[in-house]
Length: 332
Ligand code: FAQ
Image 1 (tube, helix red, strand yellow):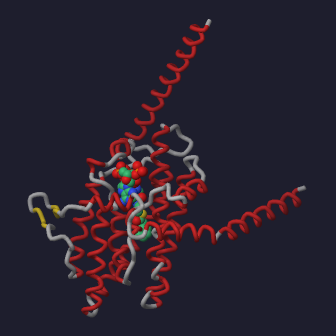
Image 2: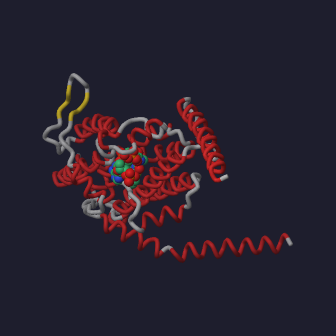
Image 3: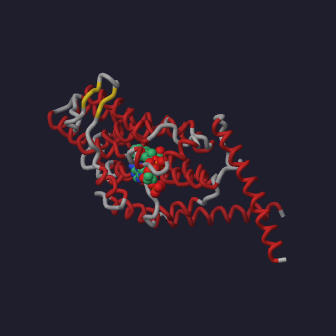
């Protein structure tokens, strides 16, 4: 009897796994055919988890990314600059919200993701752990950080997962406007007084290398690239995107009349690419481990903002409950 039961269980397990294998193969065929995967479609659990990880890290990056620039809203040099910066930071808050909403379509609650950020368990982009010391940093963030973000995110508009791909279309349009406003700040400073130009150069010197780290570890050390590429979440490797960014940005620095902070940078006629010097991956690992210049400040600021906003969430819930009760009464 006992053996019979075991045999039956094994047979069911085998049938189930054959079913799963067939579903996984059909899923991969859809991905290979460039079909979009939608929330109610079958997807392998590992695909779902990869998307929740990447989309939530991306959402957290947008939200934490509001902090370095938010620091300069009250000190922007003119009303025009203040209005543009305020709108940019609001856009970033909006990007975070679209991305949390995209993650929620995968069956995870936003509260859970926010909790992971606030407790320090979740990752967000390393770049937002660096300080904004002068006004030129706002120009450098727009030009370089948004520039790197666009390079990485344009291919995500073709990601296999529908809700993420669609969110990225709008986000990329806004990021591209952000990049231009940043470049225009850098242009104004680099054509201004000697002191202003020096400020722009100093910002480029400090932001350049951390921006190259935004694209993630070198291909040989990237944990997720193989699977994410097979699933068409990633369309280019970390190193490919980093190279595209360097190739696009070096000529822009020349227009600004600024020097690239990389003595080894040289144009390779044979490949048509700019060859850059060694990235300090120890610094990258330190920042990811929570020991960058501003990691602790960023988490403290997010936790404080969350606690300060508790009354808003409570009031919104109380208002929704009051409306629901009133509607029920009217319907009765
Ligand atoms: N920082 O195996 P891979 C923005 C982690 S938004 C921190 O290569 P993957 C807008 C990675 O998560 C900027 N962690 O990973 C803005 C993984 O950790 P895990 C954010 C990093 O996913 C502009 C581990 O290392 N953009 O800037 C970083 O295949 C201005 C192994 O790496 C996105 O999130 C890093 N730099 O490739 C806002 C775009 N790099 O999860 C305000 C979407 C790697 O195993 C102002 N994300 N890690 O613990 C992606 O494209 C990918 O997730 C990558 C990493 C390319 C970031």
